[in-house]
Length: 250
Ligand code: BEZ
Image 1 (cartoon, protein in one colour):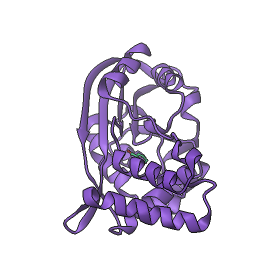
Image 2 (tube, rainbow, N blue to C red):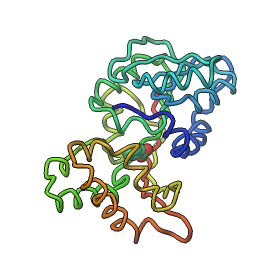
Image 3 (cartoon, protein in one colour):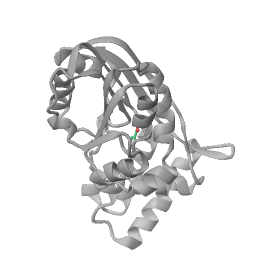
């Protein structure tokens, strides 16, 4: 997936702002070697470094990594695929915020993280959990069906597991899960109703691949109307995020 690093920083800063309290869960210590898996534009990687850790940020998008290097030239960043990690017994902790649900081969990812950690090292992450953004996904599917885009309506982009499902997968890769929660966190979108369109442009573009420009506009309008009753709350529009957070130890 090609990421728009500019749009991500300007309109979707909530992704890393919410990630700041995942850093509290990580509790980085001075001198620890930490991998930030899926670092995006590097905001959280920098915060981890400011705690005194020796941190490496990796992301599969070269556009994101270029932006991260430009913003934080004193932090180490690399382009790397989360399904093909090459590290062995190197890190005290692996950290990841809002990334794991994008990864197709979860077994390869979890085995790679396990291998990358030192014995006793921890994997601390937050990702979308079961039911995440369910309202917008079902509105997108419905609107696409109505406009006869059956194939696009079947798009599967993300993996949003339940707590039990992901804990089992972590255990299968050798981890001991010492903490896990699944909770609702309604997430304020920038730009009121236009926030839905911008969210789709940033994260859900694959649903609209091959859709004619004039239909796209109509579909987005329809989706916005469909989600409005649950997304509009007072002055703001809130997306139905469900988070899964865990600590798993090697
Ligand atoms: C999330 O962080 O939960 C998320 C972000 C983009 C698309 C889907 C989910």
